[in-house]
Length: 338
Image (cartoon, rainbow, N blue to C red; front, side, top):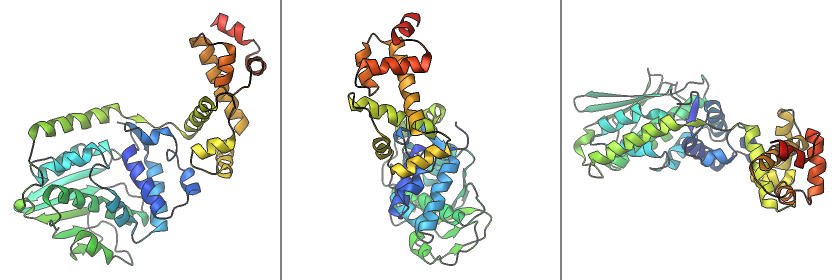
């Protein structure tokens, strides 16, 4: 498991919530991992710090309803296999036990879910990362709200908790939580974030239990945890976008404006990101062209004209001049020596 990281499913969900909350694209563009191809890769893990920054933006844009908005967006399946571990178990207690065991399939590995059964009472506790700021309020509301949504997915919309506990102190406005959780028995400043149900199993499951499916879901969750990989950093994502633009250009080349559009940011924001990384558009474009030119010369029999076109050059003479500038030798000499 990639430490200090979260799954792409969570990142996609919360970036969408941030946009719905009115967070500007240029603010999201500065967060590591928000843009780039890795966001759509189910095995990619993103820095926990990036997710916390998205939460901060959500809380700032919608301090009262941000958590509720995230809960509403978390339809079953948005968090991939983890959702079905909860809803596919024979009991709620077993489902949330699996949710705790495989929580790192979506969360930072330091997060925890614990299940306590006391007669007819079932309590599910969720320990989050704590920032020590008011953004914890929004995160905690979302975490317990998500547990309630999955419990209702498994046992029907009529399921209501008998008590909800939050670790954070009471915010100035929290009346909306009565509607979110279906109870007014909500307490703040407690020893953890907990949601308690009474006679949760009195309602029949919304779907018949399939032990073989449960076994497959557990195996799949474990394979995802074992196969997870860190997301590319911003510069890698940026260079990947340049490469894609060059490949699509058919010899026309590309521009900073086109690549900025691919990264869902303005050219001005992209210029600021480049300055932050102490580089320039020209340096990055040349780095991508150099890497691709050497790889194509070494690994293919493509003509210099074809390679030039793939790098966005109008003809092979431009490629020759650039290659000699990079390496001090001609492309033909490099290919013979490779």
